[in-house]
Amino acid sequence: MPLLRRGDVGPDVADIRATLTRIGLLPPGDPHASPVFDPTVEHAVRAFQQQRGLITDGIVGPATYRALRDATFRLGDRPLAFLIAQPVTGDDVLTLQERLLELGYDAGRANGVFGQQTEQALRSFQRDYGLIVDGMCGPDTVRALRQLQPKVRGGRPVFLREQELVRSSGPRLKGKRIIIDPGHGGADRGAVVDGLSEADLMLDLARRLEGKMAATGMEALLTRGPDNNPDEASRAKFANEAGADLILSLHTDANSSPEAQGVATFHFGSGNGTSSTVGEALAGFIQREIAVRTGMRDCRTHPKSWEILTLTRCTAVRVEVGYLTNAEDRARLADPGFRDVVAEGVLVAVKRLYLLGKDDQPTGTFTLADLLRHELAKN
Image (cartoon, rainbow, N blue to C red):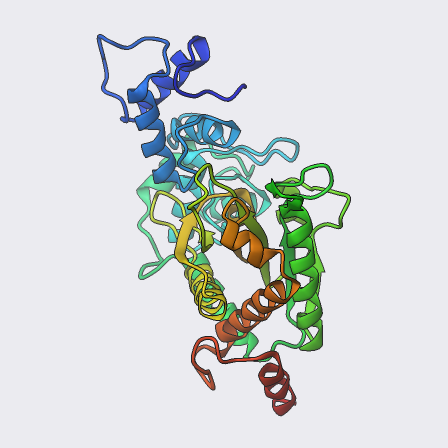
């Protein structure tokens, strides 16, 4: 569907208004309701986007439209099953995943996408409770899910497992597989200002980071080269199939205001309170290292539900390194030495994640040479 924004009129806008009313963001029975995208609708869309960890721009694009549609489903409204060609998504899927996790079945990350891991968990549940084992969540399965008491308490199991994986993997970097995801690529140049493109800058940053990681014995893989631009779902699939320990997505930003500047990092988090604790920790380490090393404005860390964060089974973090539309940030990004400093900061942040507070050093003081000595000392 086309982008919808303030001032638009038509049946698509009426559909958006009806959806916002259904989920409680517009009052029911509004006598002034019309098929016009007015300021009231824009405010409701922004509120919804903020709740769901989407870009809060008040515009209904593909991601916001999908999220609005997904928000209308409740568990039991429709049968749920694993479809390879077009996975089923929705709040009903999210509720199913969370219920299975509470009952002790590993449905993977509760992301509202009915994937193969969710199907396997559902089949295990059906088998254990004497239901027809078809991997489909129909009325009988919903009834059984609602009748049973949770087995798992005291934290979300998938993120407890995520924490345990970090702890058990040890402090050494050698052997860890990291996916580096430079944003955009190919014909999509991302933000472009004064001949500098986000796609080229982030590919260069990714290659610098790749080289530093290789020096420590890590296995670093890039999601793209200079001439291609996989969509976020494909990048997440690549990380999942590679069995990655982490995925680091690299971007710069742009804004209509030339005053907007600084670095920000993002980790998985949805509007229902689900958040990756390991992702949040890594985002915090990256944010602090880059801000301290470069002096860039600290725009903090934020939970988001972007596909690169939602669809990956491993911990994923996205970094927005400055604004190309800001003269100061742009001058920094144009400097290869600056990009090298950022790459070292990201590498050190990854090391801090695995150190778990042991043998650590103050923010901004760890160097690549320190990391190499630390790795050699562990041999």
